[in-house]
Image (cartoon, rainbow, N blue to C red; front, side, top):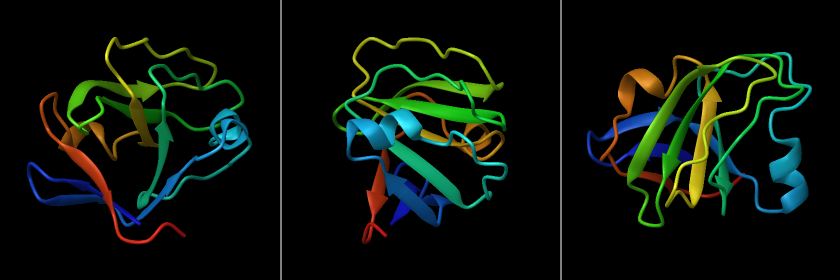
Length: 116
């Protein structure tokens, strides 16, 4: 599927995946040496993230149930703990520099298309 900023019409990631299970959410990007600039990971039922055992810096967009962005965490370094955002029910993560320049609080994000 694609991750789309519906407010601006910009495709943020051509290859977006939802981590549907608790295990998939826990593993996330752990152990990956490279995250391509067209990849994103969605974490449903999530209001906080960490980058333990993640080797590359990440951007994270915290969204409410309607997909509205509540907060954007920029350049979360490896072994960091991101903020817990009240009202967040989904977090989208991507390599640092992919989300932050193109997403602002109030924008609406959505996955579109089929999940690989």
